[in-house]
Length: 466
Ligand SMILES: [Zn+2]
Image 1 (cartoon, rainbow, N blue to C red):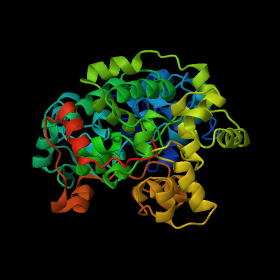
Image 2: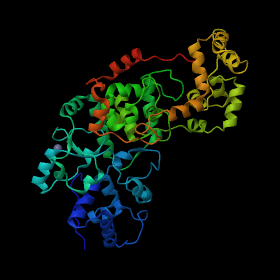
Image 3: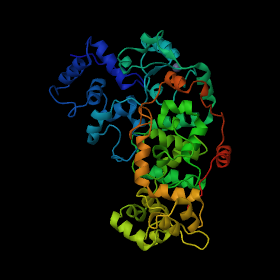
Image 4: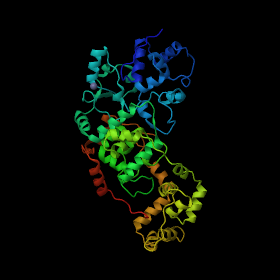
């Protein structure tokens, strides 16, 4: 026998597990999992065969897909994915996903609203962990507009939040109030909530194509090569401020102005997930007027042309042959391979092959030949190609693409912001300590147009091999 409570509305999976464990008077988590497994008649099966989420859904008396959809943060974390995008959240075919990442958290620490705690105690007779408070960037309770409190300990979910009322940290009320007045952040939270409502994910490829179309219209850089237009990542840093970004996307909080961050800028050109769903939501808020228009656009189907897909499928030796034949001119290489210019440029820059021009005014081909083959100095080579030393340097940097990428990865600060996967998000307290008085504040009610204008003025756009 086992006591099987019905999950409360929006009760987080981990909190529900804690409640089941307490009601059954079981001391350890492992013991509780064993008890659930033997009750469900699957004792002795591995976690891989029967995930904890499957057991919890059986205890709750609901279908697995429904449990995953309503009680976990998976619908958010997996809202936009390139991995099995056809599978609904919690589908039986995606069981391996459920035991590896089904019950992961979407943010660092366990958050609760003190007013919800009191209300829930009055209404349900006890408090519980609400899923909506565990989403990245939520600093106030959407219902009560009071700052959330939190405990930086994943095990906190095993006890009811009422237990932490007096010892939890509180999000700075002034900061929480500023955030709730920030239009862009509010749009971010609305889009997150909209994505959470979906029972299946959106595919990265189509989301990325939609974002790219918008970004092109607004003049942002939409490829991964040399920087020739304002970067979406810079616009995001300006609109949100580094402090709040530290709680949702630490790599952005550390980012230098004018430097491409593929985890963020890559949402516009990578066919596989650039990073977490957060990056796609951040992009959507800046590219669309409202949360509704963003959600509508993201959920509309687009056809990614086969032609475009095929273009990325060029063997390295074929690519180099075409580059040699086209004397380094990207437009010529594109027509030789019958692919689009942006696609081939991204591909060529990724392997360190910059665009080389040969006109009477500028001859970057002559310049790099002077430098690499004739062993002339940097300034002599630039003069030979009638280009500036800065442009010459940029050409050489692009030519060392593989090396500079590796060096950039090596020189990233360790800990937050490092590694390919998302680094640990900071808690509100940590982010205040890191940023301190130097915290760059966001401008509330920032408008997209203002943002773009200021960005064009502020940013130095290197003038590279046109
Ligand atoms: Zn509340």
